[in-house]
Length: 314
Picture 1 (cartoon, rainbow, N blue to C red):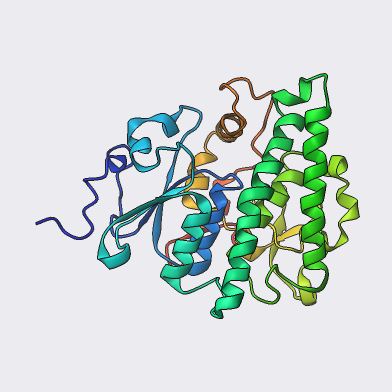
Picture 2: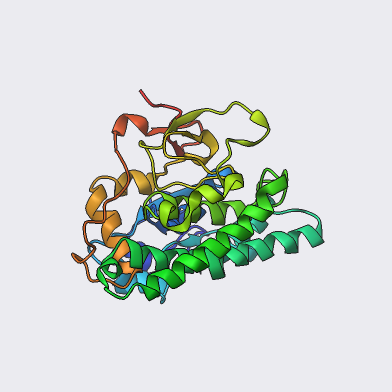
């Protein structure tokens, strides 16, 4: 009889063998969608093992990866201790966030009404912020920027501004999307806001200066450990989103094992991922650059064996 943590019946484990089969297996990259699950796992403290899915070599299209996620997108997880103690394979970042919130009992309000409200804002990101910001990135930074007809780009500029205005109104009188409580809604949303302004470089295009409540420093004047944004630039940011010359709150600057691995060849890896997400062929990403400066000295395991960034900058 196989032990409970034997995952050999899942073909994905043949390509990415687990060193710790009793932990949640994470298959991902440091992208706005990928870091959602990374951040969630870090925040909850659930034990996990991370695996880089290389878009540079099309690993997302291999039979092993497709056996877990037929939609060939990251992130995806394999939890050896799923419901009823049985392994659970799961994909779609929003679904994974909800599952991990339920599993851990964290980062979702306990009150049923507020729980549905938080779910509403999570769906707002999944159905609006992510897809619309991603399309704007294609037309502003990647192959679409060379199109003479700017009407498609302008359509997504207008939609991005509309979505930012919704967030601006929401953040006018609160620290986080759900008020004082940091939830999955924040984990899902702020990586995309950061990506729009940082990696896509679309701040001027969308009139970022108009959204004062999305630029404020961390709420309540709390002192936070920070690191330079130039050290890690594809990260989540809170409702107190940050200008390029400010620091990133330490709780939002977790760089995980899969990110460490991906940064071994940073520019090619992330550029290939973004190109794939935008529907481009590898090599046609028009000088997309990964926004990382990797120094292995900055990646140190903490007491729980997780890898955090910024706490160990030297």
